[in-house]
Length: 521
Image (tube, rainbow, N blue to C red):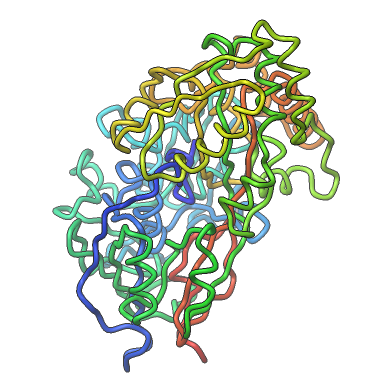
């Protein structure tokens, strides 16, 4: 379950776009209207409805326009938003009290019925929501009176509030019911209660947001945000350098040095909730052998790879969980997990224990022109030193992605996923559930069992020390069996031209337009 930087439902950074899309110059931070921000992302939003646009570019705009019932504070703890408070009458139910006197930007009042329907619609097959996987444990949603919403789950789920902070975006029921399949499209748009409202949304010419003057919370410092897409990394950098663009989150940590030297531009990096790794298809030939998998883990120089891919703005990964999730779960008491240091002698010793002591040859498809190509070329060079020969098979990005998501020809795959919550139960089902091993799932290793599925179900309702112990046991098994080789975590970055500042940036607060302000305000 992935999010825009949010979703892991997207293989983030797996493909590095190569087509340029430079827009026409617009007035930005260097002009007289300092409360107008020109923002560029590396991809265009496709929908202002999370049900049909669960990706970084789309969700960045959604969270500026649509409030959620709860939010996450700087520590990743659920906090009030449209719900001022909530109770948990039973382990498998929640009751939310709605904030009073909130209106949508069309002037209509927010009701409990709107809030309830905004969640239940994700369960409707007719909506075909991309966020449906976040709410698989939701059994029933109902308005209780005029100011309360009751959510009943099929079983206890400690991650519910965290995923609700991303995906329970509240829209008017009347509008959503009338447009189950095209809410959020340029033709229909959307209406919210958030700090901004949509003045323009075009798939080709960009998006314009204007401040919601009737917003119930603190007013944003920006009056207007103009959003464009520039997919080519160097074109984007030049647009910021020239002043055509005031701000972007499209900088790649790998290219940090190119950005930090720009005159009049400030770059900031903070930990990203992501994990880059190799998925080893445990049902494929030599990869069935755990000693082969351990040999691969020892043979990959993760330190060199981390330096190559993060430009000093990242860390070596020791487990398959993003580091912010590890910190939220364990704090300073991080357990020791099975780890495979770069050691060619140890790698050769493991390979000698396998059925392939002299090595083998394996075809490796990858997306040409992508970060994945760079990673796999480095991995191939490392593995060649122990006799494992990877035959590189490039293909266009869209073709490669279709093949990958269909789970065809899986072997050694580079994957980089971004997630949106502090909850390990957002990530672990992607890694080891049998459901995620099916086509369109993210378990590219195929590692899973009925017993693991039962443990994942139990984890969803666990709390406190029991939760820590269960995660530790699962991560230990993954480390011992090596269906994955964790590689690195990459920091998130944002670039701002002089004239704008940002305070309160964190992995749990993706609402950039609420924290960016004109300098001096």
